Length: 147
Image 1: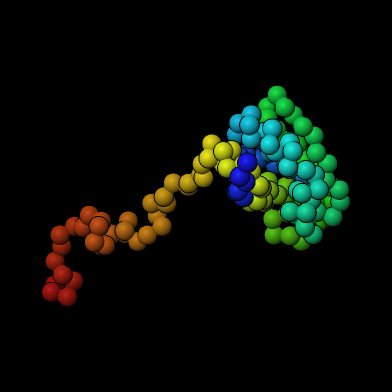
Image 2: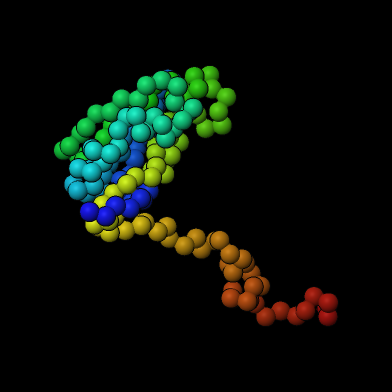
């Protein structure tokens, strides 16, 4: 079986929460096959290592198979939590997005069954929407210099 490395976000999405100085992150698999694989490879130790120095306490994991989820509780993860922290974004919401950037090794067949998620194009990413650009609608008016 040939393996490849992909980002976790191809196999799952995550929902965060926080209470005090702790953060909980629930990773929901996009399919039963993805869940079965994540149960084997997405351990509490892997998640703790991924967060590095951000999580000072232990990380625990619970399996929730009826909804294809893995729930993680990261202790001492929010630099004191709420008003005690000097982090720019200390809440657990940031940690859920971060876990989806974790690289996981998967069988190629599983990766093929979960194609890369493409973000829709941002219509405001270019200047084309500005008035007066080549592709935007312009209004006929006299040249300002000629008036």
